[in-house]
Length: 346
Image (tube, rainbow, N blue to C red; front, side, top):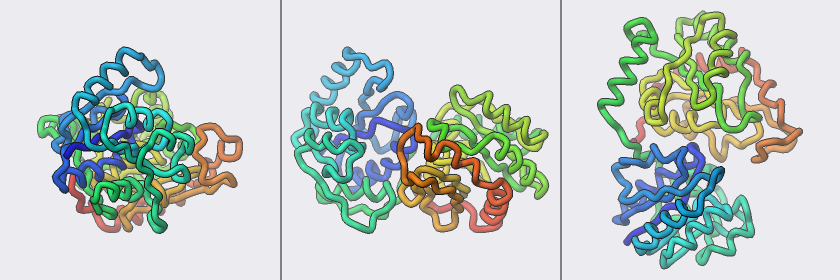
């Protein structure tokens, strides 16, 4: 039996769908995936993935690329296509894949409810499943697979990449990684309204340094100036990380003692590899897509529109500024003093 996973974006959402891949393979299914470019590295050379189809990016969409991807999907003759995104575009990919069964959430559980029109088999979500990982896993019940509660995150791993990242981190730290380990501060992300301010991250780095912890500021494409503002605000307490591709960041997170980040892909990667985290939330709901380890810490300023998934909303534009750096520092120190890495299958 062959299943197609349709989860096109974003990085965090793809991470939260990885346990589906593990569950499918654990129950004897072959698995394919259709994904847009930003999250593709998480799936290339994935040990549990049989086939990967490249969807054109939503911005800069090109019909010839889409047609080629659809031809490759239809040639596979999938038994089932599962739409985990609940959007018009994801439902269209699932329906046009040629799969014998097209499975997705019912209207009430979709981001774009009318897109359920493309879905042949609609799944209502049972109560008591707040986290998006379990919502994803619940969709597998249509295939006779019970995997709710699983937290297995199959990610590709290269020993060469791991060594290279470890060497770069040691060089950044002055030759050796400190015995206390490093704390990764990730100020960037796709939604500006979900991000904590650079000055607040700088204050956090100063406080961590006072307690003997070295901070490294990570950054993605287009975020280097933001990382530099954090370093400047830290007064030298933090260092800017070296450039990291997506899988480089996975290895960097594996080496970290702690990650502090907002509701972004780097936070979800850190959770997936079992690194302790302090998560900073505002408009979105941490019960839905925050840390799932009971030992991790979450701080949130709740706007009146919460939970809100609008990138721009006047009711939550400045809410993240209300999270005080001293409270984040206290949470970080508690997490650093608590249990270490979670034991997860990756």
